[in-house]
Image 1 (cartoon, rainbow, N blue to C red):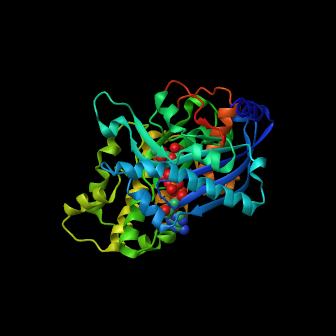
Image 2 (cartoon, rainbow, N blue to C red):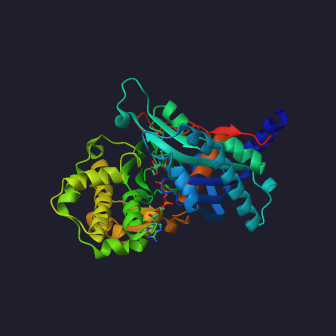
Image 3 (cartoon, helix red, strand yellow):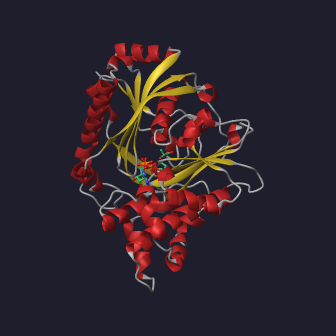
Length: 397
Ligand SMILES: Nc1ncnc2c1ncn2[C@@H]1O[C@H](COP(=O)(O)OP(=O)(O)OP(=O)(O)O)[C@@H](O)[C@H]1O
Ligand SMILES: CC(=O)N[C@H]1[C@@H]2OC[C@@H](O2)[C@@H](O)[C@@H]1O[C@H](C)C(=O)O
């Protein structure tokens, strides 16, 4: 153990660290792998992405995850075996990437692993008296470390909860360190399975930074595109563009209690599920065609994103929005968000030098860098952004 502690200390004292950030999100599309070079820490962080790829999951693996994903009742043995299985799978995927990129594992200082969220249960959602905010990510990092030989930092969400948060959104830390700019107030909108945004004030005052989930990103669009079109997602929003928005269904979807909860708040596919949509549809008079349903779900996603931004931020200030995550490729969704927030310039995050597809993986590399080198950044006493270092350390041997 001592040799590992010494190695860790040497990494913490390096001027530049090479860190692999990993994200496996709620869309279950694949493992995002970003090899980053990082110098400095906190607001002095400088980061460049050397390589990025998404290693796709096959359908058999997705189905294994779905058995324990976002459900109230599961087979506990399945959960137990998936924990080391995903860790080992991710370790193998990293080694494949490194081989392709011609980088030896010994040339990488750290892996930063998010794991796979299987259940997210903030207090406002589970409503169990006396129980805390809770979230569970699996894909144990000891397996990644042993498999790759690289020190791995993981399980970032538990400390966030221990320090008073809901375990998400964590993107806010990396957003603030990498993308704050004194020339403009920025909104960084990420649309994965679930959507969230970070507000970055031009004042650069950490205590004004704000973040929240807004509700569904692609999760409902994906689920019904899979069901009716046997495709993983509505490519570029073409199906939504061909359908008509159903006003009654849209209004009823928007009445979900999540939208009247105070900010900041977090959610997941446990709440925004096919069951939720089916129950709402049962109450609707007309039967919808599949393209009308996809159009309505896309509009629902856009309206709840725009509504959250409108309610949480001061309309009198000027902002520029930078969009990321897979939903930024959905033109129908992006068009609707722009229409709903007139006067707000909407750009792609890529304009700030980091690919919008790589952003979340990069953010975990930033979090691991903070664990190693960070000094304390205080985000004020408000909810949602505790000023703590996150993550647990797994050694390879
Ligand atoms: N060309 C495209 N057109 C429309 N949608 C797309 C396109 N490419 C990707 N997407 C959407 O983006 C999703 C993947 O997004 P992303 O990888 O950001 O999500 P995630 O990281 O799994 O989710 P989360 O951030 O909620 O954990 C796909 O499931 C799909 O819905
Ligand atoms: C519990 C969990 O995995 N939440 C994810 C999910 O996907 C998007 C949104 O909901 C966000 O809150 C979070 O991920 C990103 C990386 C975050 O924490 O910022």
